[in-house]
Amino acid sequence: MAPDRFHKTSRPMQLGIRANLAQVLQQLLQVLLVGMTIGMMRNVVPALAESEFGLQRGSFMLLVAFVVAFGFVKGAMNFVAGRMAERMGRRRVLLLGWLVALPIPPIIWFAPSWSWIVAATVLLGVNQGLTWSMTQTSKLDITTPDQRGLVIGLNEFSGYVGVALAAVITGYAASLLGPRAGLLWFGGAVIGLATLLAWLAVAETLPWARAETRPGANAGKTAVRPRYPTGVSNEPGTREIFALMTWRDRRMAALCQAGLVEKFVDALVWVFWPVYLHQQGVGLPGIGWIVGVYGFTWGGAQFFTGKLSDRVGRQVLNVWGMWICGVGVLLFPLGAGSTWWSASAAVAGLGMAMLYPNLSAAVADIAHPAWRASAIGIYRFWRDLGYGIGGLGLGIAATLGGNLVTAFWFVAAAMFASGALLYHWGEETHPGLNPAS
Image 1 (cartoon, helix red, strand yellow):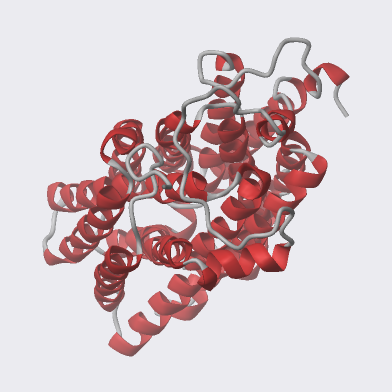
Image 2 (cartoon, rainbow, N blue to C red):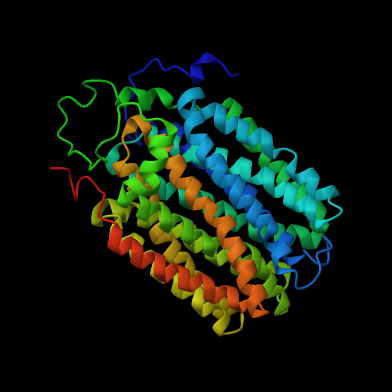
């Protein structure tokens, strides 16, 4: 592996963005490249599934197969990544994720059928589960509790700006070079650069997390105590944390179900928006820009909504974000024209920006540092499983309804219901606004 200087530090392990600015910026660059890696699959591939990769028209279940595979694989890898990170370190898991991604562009280049695209997406799920999880966990390790909303907002801002940029750039690259060549060169450059930077410039942050759990680490500090779950052992195993996150703690369960359902929206945007717009006569660059409006709004607004939650709390932004996002999905097929579709995409993106960083921040608020990485990994397991479950739901809804629009109604209804459940089961988790007694 890389030199020891990346695993040890000669200066005190201070917490905070300012004290660790260089590494925070490195991690933001990493998640930008992570977002660009998934973004290269979100415009050209579904839009040209029939003409370029031989998918039969109207095969809704086959069309969603690649995002279903992605969701189940990424969800599982999020679960594994949290445990791996506490044993072998954040940086090694990050680097492993990039090594797995290296074959993706050549597979797309040589793909003779849609099954090859599904296989490439399986590798993409492994890559995203390992790399995106580690960028978030690493920044939480080295920043203070009152910066969590801001840090996760910055993380998701950078990642989804990367997604949006890739959707636009690959649209033009496919038009100029051809779909396969455009994705080959774009993907090779992004993944190659990310792997190199992960090897040379990213530091290991596990020592910061371990230092936070040492006896006396918080001596003399006046910070309020978070509402950690009760009845948890000192060194909980995977089964105990999984049960805690999934049903034992109602707050964690509410956050996990909301995370799962909000991925229905992203599955819809990924699979059916490009196909729907292509059927309406929109070209690849135009599709890239409309899908990009969703990504840019989502990414850009998180720069503010993450920090806002440090002031007003997580719960109100999470609940209203679910409902506003559902409204954006509902509006999309009710009108026509680039202006209408872009405005609807912006509404959906704004709702996602309100909820996306703050669901994660809420989990981090009430997860003990000793098992925080595992808790985040399990939350991300359920959240990204939403790609798989949502993808199946999209395919079934479109098949039963005989058209893509039925899938829009399915997703909007799920978002409204999930937001209501979060409202009733959840509570404010910010320790400064709702501290433990």
